[in-house]
Image 1 (cartoon, one colour):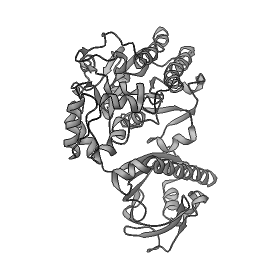
Image 2 (cartoon, helix red, strand yellow; image 1 turned 60 degrees about the vertical axis):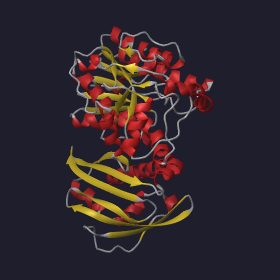
Image 3 (cartoon, helix red, strand yellow; image 1 turned 180 degrees about the vertical axis):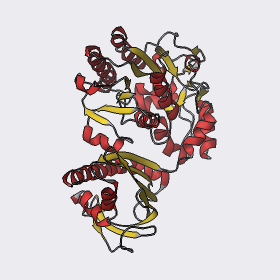
Length: 457
């Protein structure tokens, strides 16, 4: 099935693309910045640039598309809810969804299904009450955003497109979402319950969220609103205790409700509101959660030690010729931004093989850096991996894979890394370092693309 995804560069979108690819689906992406997206897409995809907040996407983007999964939207926890930020949050859902659905309604050949994200925030603050898809909505800002978000999809339904609205709970996973904000404070021993700790938290593991999206496009009996949450919600107190155990780290610092309201204002409602949401309707469709209980989910999340960047690139060159380019370490200089002044030193072996050491020198933020990397695994014709021996990271491993396909070569990169000083390093410089890495890797992708376009295959 050919599936178009919005919000593909986000936390859920990234995992969704891997799930779609695993299930054999062809992927199309609409993104605001086509160039910046390249290093954030873990699979080969047809990519189109369009700011859905301000523009109706071209009908050509949907050629052959059979399913649309709409995840795009401003991060609700990305900053204090000022008047302007609230407008951004609302418009990123209302306008973007409206423009997308308008484009779908104009199509002569319409997709079979639209799956659109929403959130359990639609229910408002509901204490201990079990909430189903038929429960009344809240009256606060977030509830109004969710309601407006869902209403915008109704035109698709009227146009004859099967429409599924998923009300997502708190999405948990390593490297993004709620856990990204909690990780460093808990690891440093500054975690604790929020408010009374008695508020209910309806959550879902990011892999189950992605699988639920795929479940919706593959099962034509699904239509309407579904709560996409684990069958086992917990109170914030229980969540804190289970996270303590999973991290083997005490969380002795509770944060009073009044302090949260002072610190983040109205946005504190996403931390303090109680929503005990049922996923029985989704379960009745045959969907099976891989992470139905929190202990299992947190064990999987906390089992990750490394940050990860995955991306894929196709080049019009044979596997042999493509791998030959990467077998010569001096070519690293050609695909690295000139501002870094990267130089390759004397290599321990002639050509790459297992154990080859490659000394590098470069500068970043005007600081001179020495880096020695070693080829850890060497698989002729298929790829290799290199790992840092000495350098700026606590850990670095880069896997390069090459596969002949569609008359060219598919290059897959998987980078795993750890910053110095553990969670403190993540808190202080994690976001800055990742942005810098993405900038360097985007430059690399662009240069590799140009190199192989100019070379006869």
